[in-house]
Image 1 (cartoon, protein in one colour):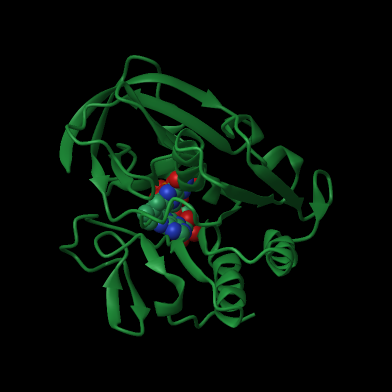
Image 2: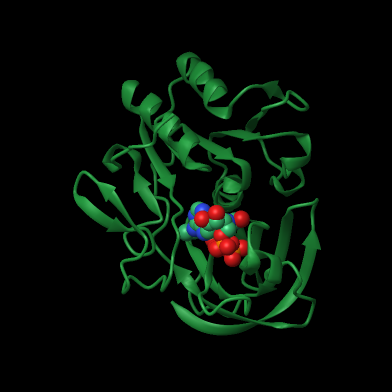
Length: 253
Ligand SMILES: Cc1cc2nc3c(=O)[nH]c(=O)nc-3n(C[C@H](O)[C@H](O)[C@H](O)COP(=O)(O)OP(=O)(O)OC[C@H]3O[C@@H](n4cnc5c(N)ncnc54)[C@H](O)[C@@H]3O)c2cc1C
């Protein structure tokens, strides 16, 4: 983990609410898929966490949705500006057997950490399938998907692209045809809960990237804890990647 000042290489507003920011990679260690950066947006004193969506020796990419003041301010950065960043933080998706059948499942902006995994898997020539769902065609960031020989399934809530319905429904159907050895997923909590229940029923290991309101990002303040069967765990330190079987789901429908 390092505290860096990184030059912004580019910023793109992708549609009304999504933004891509690429900045100089000044970390002295290479981030692993699943890790995140904590950025001082200057809109607030508290940093904002973002999954690393892609990375080379030269640059790091984040993709985010404009939600409140922090992300709004970050959407206004310009090429050449310096960003105050701490990272890479948190754990990462586990390493898996070379021959494992891996399914990646992303909902909405949950595509950010999944893109980084997919890029790595394409490089490693692994067998994987991608399930990617969003509210509508506009919200699918298809242009960021790496080229490669893997099967992709798309869903939208309104049917404007891919199959109408949820990404978990399509994942369940395809898992009946060919059971994956392991699942990596990121997206809204409700989607992750449904996916986790389904994986548990079918005895499939799933690792999910969790989000929570976060303050220090360093494991000190305990502000981002979530309840697991092993007690409370910090999303910033023990996470953000968790074995889905460990999470105590308590969302109401
Ligand atoms: C490990 C981690 C990785 C993340 N990666 C990404 C990413 O790659 N792309 C992306 O768009 N977002 C990501 N997020 C969420 C992102 O950090 C929040 O959207 C951002 O902090 C909101 O800041 P804000 O000042 O714009 O909005 P705020 O005013 O702080 O919040 C706006 C709304 O979003 C909710 N919110 C704020 N923070 C979170 C959060 N962490 N989780 C869930 N809801 C939140 C608030 O309750 C409020 O309703 C990640 C969060 C975590 C913890």
